[in-house]
Amino acid sequence: MLNDYDPRIRPIQNQSQPIYINTKFVPLGLIDFDTTLQQFSMMAYIRIGWIDHNINWTPRFYSATYSLRVPTRQIWTPNLILRKSVDGQGVIGDADTDRIYVSWRGHVQWVPEATYSVVCNVNVRYYPFDEQTCTLTFYVPGESVDTLELDHYKNVDMSECMENAAWIIVGVSRTRHVRDNNYNIDIEFKMQRRADFTTFTLVAPLLMLAFLNICVFLVPSNSGEKGSFSITIFLAYSVYMSMMSETLPHNSVEISFFIVFIIVLLCLSVVSVFYTIIQAKLASAFGNKECPINCFRRTVDRNKVVPVGPAGNLENTCVYTWGNFFDQLDTFLFGSFLVTITLITGIFFSVLLRNVTFDDPDLNFEPEATTRSMPFRTTVAA
Image (cartoon, rainbow, N blue to C red; front, top):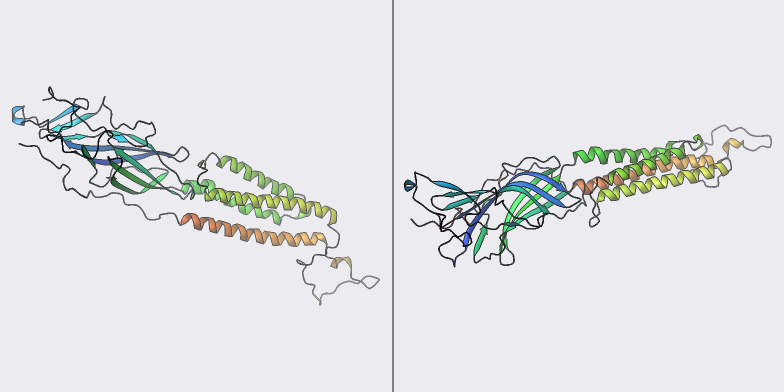
């Protein structure tokens, strides 16, 4: 039957009509999604079916043979291409290893399985609680809507897809559109990052370090440890930033709110170090002198007994010095920094968590017809 077969000619009786190609995309698992390189890789196979009018036989004349498996080079196959492929080619299938199932009525089914990798635009604004959308687009170059009709009339079957350790697929959709007079099939995946690992390894230590930073105002200024404590916290921020630079996605198009949060906490640490140094300098120069600033001075109890000196004046115990002022200022700054960090943290999480989908996705879609009730539009004449 294949002796006079020409794989260059579309296997349809009326060459003025387009040949109908039906596809069904079946994902097997998300292999990798590199947000730094913006590469999305999905392991899957595609069920590609059509009717070859040049192949049909009567099984009783051929030892009750109802089907054949032939190499892809021997019969006509659609040159299906993956758009925006990472390797720059995007050829679907392997002509050296793939085999095609052909029934005695001319029904042809081709199931190429591979890892499909495409370039995907990444938006890290809501990292680590971000959601990403990547699309796999298939088309047949060299054909037009007048010669080939590419379709995906059923929903994407997610029943065989395995879970990924880093991402949750929360939605899958397929659409067909015409681009450059050619049918294109878009398989769109909407994914949500699993933020548990990032929360325990990045966010939680950062919050602990932030609240530990405000404890510098509780250290007495005359202890000699206040400056070293504040500088140690600042150095801890620096080491933390160098570690996270290798973890966070490198994207300058969309600035992550998480990066802004880190910068704000780092600025507060710089302010605390600067204040500690200035305070140590002023306390060593004017610590025992009277302070004219009375905004933090406590009200003196008029019923309290105060010793009187020989000249009839109050003793030096009632003198409000710069040291007393700095002690009261530390208490005020401790409360102010505590409220500021709490508000910043609350705003940060409220902005990020509003983008999170908490419902468990149900991706076991039931196949449903859209425009066609049968995978093949035409039948082979008896």
